Length: 230
Image (cartoon, rainbow, N blue to C red; front, top):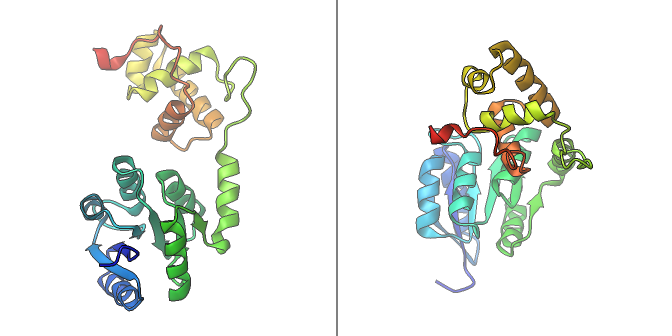
């Protein structure tokens, strides 16, 4: 195999789509498909074993979806170059894929020559989002960006009590456990959690915990007991 051959792993649960992509790519000079996977979990194993130049990743798959697989691959192999190739142009898929570490986002109706061009671009470490969905992705990034940090160093304007609740929430504590630790009622905890989700623009507790860790909101909370320590 030539050193300039672009090696590809296809992660796609639909057999006909996977075989079609392989046929198209194998006909392209300088491109070789070296692996196939029918679900995200298998895709992670193949990617880390084969170390292809580019990974074509479907989104909706059994066992493990494409966003989760991309996240796992990039976490274990930061140099991985993933292109999400999907029929979905939904804002949340675009944003989640980018956050997971994908460098490219294309719809499956992309012409073969355009796909090859983007693969070469991503191989060089450049990012590409199909123009049809790029504007949506930009709006989502702006919407999800935190407000400017205030003079108190608290970018989300959380109260001290909300910070305490968030710290415990990020540790995986239930409302009952938080209430017990902070000597407040479970109903009060629910109100605090609702306020926290609103201020962080988080859809659920898991997303709130992720935002808290990314923006250091659980730091400087030494007075709040860590549930993991018993």
